[in-house]
Image (tube, rainbow, N blue to C red; front, side, top):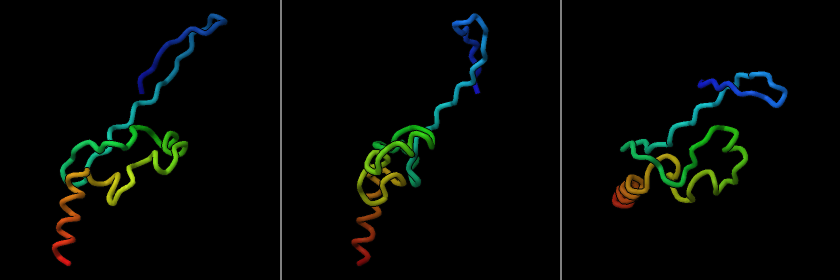
Length: 79
């Protein structure tokens, strides 16, 4: 974790550890960055509503839109 030295109002120098940002969510099949999924840690996710955590569609948050379309087409053709 990166450390920052910061001077307080009393004049003391305090070392503050900043949290690293969490990486982007990626598609399970092609590895592209998932759009509509926020980049944050567990604290951020707990404060968001269900619709704010991921898009409202099948396989959202796991596959990108192109890959999920392909999977749905394959499933429809099998039936």
